[in-house]
Image 1 (cartoon, chains in turn yellow, blue):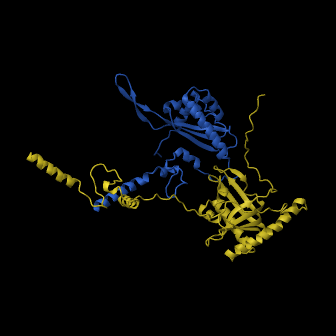
Image 2: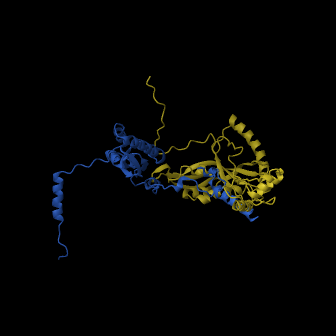
Image 3: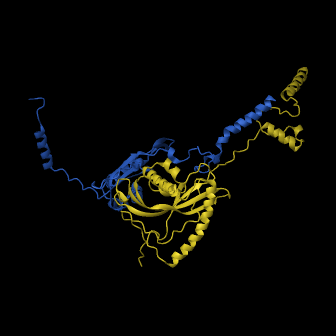
Amino acid sequence: MAAAMAARLCLKGAESLLRPRALPGVVVPVRGRRKWPRVPEWARELSAEEKEWRLRSAAPIFPDERMERTFFLACTAEIMDPYVPPEGDARLTSLSKDGVKQQMQKLRQTAASQLALRKIKDHDPDFSTKTFPEKAQEIFIEAHNSLANFNKQKLHSLVTERCYPDMVRGNRYKTIRWRFVESLEPPRVVHVRCEGLLNRGNLYGQVTVRMHSRQILAIYDRFGRLMYGGEEIPKDVLEYVVFERYLVNPYGTWRMHGKIIPEWAPPKDPIIKTVMIPGPAPDPS
Amino acid sequence: MAARWALGAGAAWARGLLSWARPERWLASGSLFPLSCIHTSTSLQKIGKWEKKNRIVYPPQLPGEPRRPAEIYHCRREIKYSKDKMWYLAKLIKGMSIDQALAQLEFSDKKGAKVIKEVLLEAQEMAVRKHNVEFKSNLHIAESQTGRGRYVKRLRCHGKGMFGMMRISRCHYFVKLVEGPPPPPEPPKTGFDQAKEYVQQLRNRTLVHTL
């Protein structure tokens, strides 16, 4: 009996040791599988604020990382308001209905070009329509040379991201030989546009330069066989090349953005090999 | 107080451990990631030597040189077939023109014939589109080889609780197509040729280290 009483007392004492009465505001570690958030009975009537405070202090929940990626638009995706080259350029001019229409368009384009030119000069005071075409031609020649040498870093700095895949597609296992022989007419600025993307202030300037030049192009395939063009065949080429610059960026440079191919341009030479174009399946009837 | 801190820290540590195991971070495409340093493309898998042979670029030929014939390498990996059984088909089509090879494989009863036919058609398509081959029939098979794939051991149950280990065998198939008509077959060696060779060997004998 006495032993039982002593045992019970001991048990009680042990119980009080095992489960000590905790002071309010202190989380008591309890043995056994932890299932949190543990809310002791005396804490269930607390207000919402205190409950939140207890939860936060017990197990701080870190908010998930925001899946954000900053991107930087270094170039526009297209040529804004493309220049329409007059029909019969670099050939004998013909007085036709289309010619008159294009002349009318030309006047409208000139007015907008002057506005855009003024905006560009605000951001870049060194810009001038007299000196720019030579620089543009240099950029053009450098870009094509680095394309022939597969110098990707230099090509990225001379050509915008929109133009790069157009230039580089399909060239991976081919050898390209390109040479600029001479310029038949001095290049000149034909068209200027300046617009913003997303914001009104986010300005990109696009300048179209007309170049008439003689070039040599030869493309060899993987095995060194000639695919297109020739090493000794210079071709006269009339091109309208668009250059772009991110005006708001102080480190922006003028880079090649694309070419405008008019509808009246003469068709390109065919490639040397013959290609089979599968036609419709023949009908037995 | 210390206990409470330990509890909090422990939970945070566990959360920190498991935070990398979120399934959305394991997406295959690389464009959805905020961190661009994670390498998600397939270039970490090993590219076989046969596939790399399609990447060599020859320098441009001078106008006087004879035209270099195009060579196209193609292969298929881990075909569920035995390499020894596949070898018979590979030996059959070695040296044939591609049309003849396709015809033979179409009417062969073996399982591997269907696979090899697909491989040849793929290679032909690749040749015309990417490797500047002009006529798709102007190809012949220069090399065709089989290789051992990864074998896997599995249990094969017999009666009375007995079992054996069986091998699931896979093979690779390699083919090299070359542009041009197939080379003419070598004429069989006649006795006369052998005799000529023997006589020539006798004539080639000489004395060494003499005056």
